[in-house]
Image (tube, rainbow, N blue to C red; front, side, top):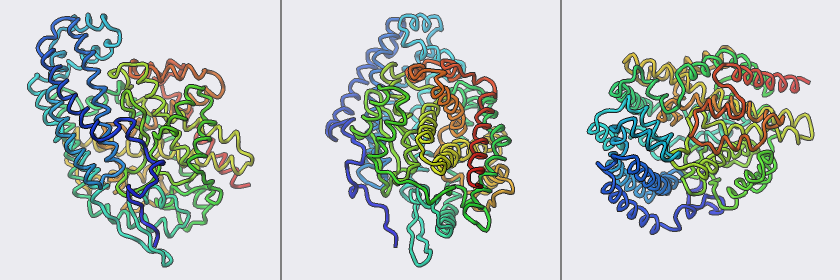
Length: 598
């Protein structure tokens, strides 16, 4: 039998992230929590019902931003440990207690935004003029006034937030703690299955029997939970629709896209152009995989296999550090120091273990180091994942260092651009260093199978599914597991056409992603990579200088996504850049096919 994933306490601590970068020990964490609760009480006593002058508003914002910075560090300490071991009772209890305390804190602080929204626009603009750092936040407050509810209702919504946001927590608890997958047997070898093993190993396994059996047993378990998951998801989207109506939005899309600072046509463009123009190229890529591997048929279980599996290089963690420093050196000395710190100061949690979140992410608590979670498997393509997450870390290290906390986060429409820029820079660097045509072809195949497949296919198909779901929500049509399965199945079949056999159980794929609890997030991966592809080429061709891009990162949330792109001369208001990127992807696929046919 294949070995089970280790438990958290069995890992080499040097390959895990260092929580002492936030708090040296549990005692100091608890003391910080106790202290901020006292400081919040003092904040309320000082400013509640007293923000009637531009000076008081400015003083209140300064104090508020200090509290928010401290709260991000306190919140991260608990949530990050839960993400690496959701099975741990200690982690569950710490996070559960923290959520109750945060609920109380949110109720106390709810007066702040409420009172600002009751303040005249003239006074808010006077306060904005008094301190440039506050102008972006206060101008957003003025815009939010259009959809603000009376203070008592706003305060009630804040008080109910743990319940209103429970669907996301329930999803993760079902997925990471409750679901236990059946083993499967291939050639007398027993294989354990789990979310982590399936998504990090079996989906890519070169053995067709192992891969297809893993898929079938994995989806059999998903099917057992589909009705509960569907009910949980329906509760979430119904909440969003109800709140959008309460706030006077004409559609749930307008409500969810407000913070992204783009309109629905930007989302529709990403979905429609990729579904129509990229699909033919990806179908050719799928057909190539079938031929290379000598498959009897190309199925949904086969889409993530490598073009050249026997060439897959393996790298150690230390080797990945050297590769990243070299590959991202184009971004300059200061950026390279961030990469070195990420390894030397243990910002990265590498190993796979039981109860750990799948995939990868980066959190950057204000005033602290970043925290990168991945599930390291020792393959070269994991270096691309690291480059991606370091892109997020670098972005927020610059933004956090150059902006006040309320100005650090740009629109979600932009959020994946720095990370995907890094992926493209890394891939193109490896192509330049490649010693053989085979190696170049392999790296191009990783660009397609990892970077573009992940962002322009996997997440884009999530977005296409999500759009159909929200169309039903806006029309007040009910959802069920059967309906959700059919929507997902229809999206998959539309994209892959006759090139790939899509079984009925593939409709359950919607159950695998937490993104559906994060607003209209999935389509922004392709939006970010659209800009990331363009920026990486501009950097390599010296059309822009590294400091031009670093200045964009430093700007944080002080500009709209279109304004951030214009800082480096890219116009995202038309479809031109997206069409160029789709053509680039198609060309890479044609290059791979030509190389494999020689």
